[in-house]
Image (cartoon, rainbow, N blue to C red; front, side, top):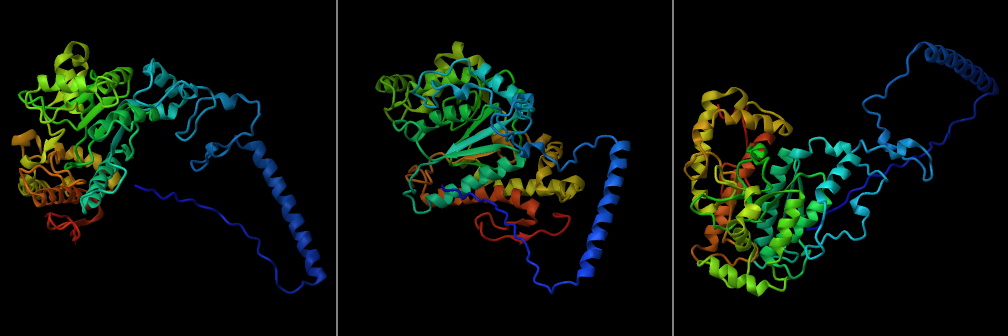
Length: 447
């Protein structure tokens, strides 16, 4: 994906006086008038300076726009940064020539201390760090083989951007291999490590696969639930071994160590073939012989539980990652249920508001969704719908269903989510299978 950088420039011009020449007397009067005005101004200014206290900068004034010349000797230059855009000159871990972003480089050590020191240098970013999230996702560098693959990936990306914007989450979309040998599903591991180093201000790194869609734009991650944990994955008590392409990882030394061990099962490692055999022996229903990241993750969860298990949270109370075939058919019923609540309650639920304050309205909704429950038996909007097996880019979908079935399901899920976004802009898609058509919403909808 290419991005366009926009730059702004200012052009100053001096208007030339093309008028007729003035009489000399007029010029003399002008000089006398200007001189008198200047004297009056100086007198007023002197009295004002004497009697008034030192003014404080107005809210629109920003000292961050000024930079001291190189070589200036002042203690202010050594002060911690008070702006998110500033980077103090004091050295930190970025100045270490031994630091490497690569997953196959020597392990990162003392990462917690390095992050802590960096945040001390950037107090504007240290504030609220415990709840700051960076979403990481991506796709391949080349065009999709499936003719509509790039269109679908763009729609999935828009969906993630919409959710992130509403919840104040930064997002990084990667479409290159940071370790060329770690292809396909293994590409996420080196990407997450690089993201952790690139974003020490983020407490959580949230990996979301390209074919996963947010289908509840109001739902917020219950981060307080994960305070004692460093990795959050989805799973059911009786179905722990399933594809896990959405995970939340704390930006800490534990995660660095975990990823180093996890990556040793990958195709760049000398024991790649051995790990394939171990995974096939451990998981009898494994479909292919090579070691894969999902099997590796579950292996560590099951076989090295004493080492890692206490810090891993298996989320089963809501659709942290839901399978599309058990979700998509419920969208119409879910929409009807939500509209019934809005019609019966009104007030804040139907009030028009700016998108920036959507989170507060999402919290109001929670009061009316207590009886909806969570998960498979719930009529609550599923948080994330994952299109496992559809392969929108390659088109090599699971033969259990047709490509058209996948396409229609993805359109419905993405349009279902888009309706929640467009609500703040005064429009709605009347048909979930027609993402190009919208209707304007009347005031007090859906009264």
